Length: 310
Image (cartoon, rainbow, N blue to C red; front, side, top):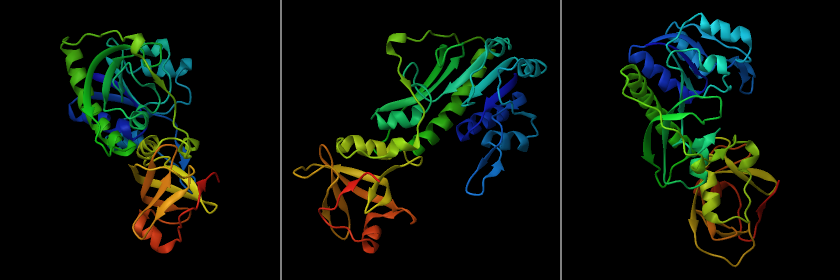
């Protein structure tokens, strides 16, 4: 099938590669404009652009896809379908109606739950037992179109935002190829979303990682996993930022929230609003990420010390 592919981050790379491998004619790839990244602020291509160029596919990078000239540019390619995976811009009605098969979105949740940005991290943070990917016939709303197909998977007890990202990216690539095949042979029909079941999530901000020790240990532990690898959960210790990469929950009380209640050569525990958080892998400001025992060999931690605001 002749198509235009729209996507930007790593999540979309697997889907683009899978469509190419399946033999579809990807006539154009649309991705976000190049941006400066890293410490040196060097301009870098998006992951999707890198893949497109490696396959010799033309790349288009509009700042605002809604502009009339952008719509006309896409019209030149006469796509039968447009596939969208984490593109990063809202498509106007003119583009949604351009292909004969419309625009199909690969969304990393089991719609109608977790519409919007960052559904992967929020699934972990909120303690969901399952997640998945949905292919959806796009309409003018935000993730409100008819559901085409779904694939579901269980979250592991130690699931992180990063590990779930990898699983859903792979599942989304496979599901998209399957959905396009079913659209081509007429064996898939859309199902309207149940608005009563809809939930919405916003973007993840770095500030979300600041730990509130008054919250229950189980909630903080999910935050640690959900924000791993970005932006990470963090607190402060002796005036320095301490990132927490891995932790577990233990029972216990009788101390102030944020107080270190146990510290030995192997691990240390912090009192929370309900239960204690055992810190297993941390990273002090300016240092490398390391297991708790290695951290404790080089940094003095004593019972009674407080974790808290910077």
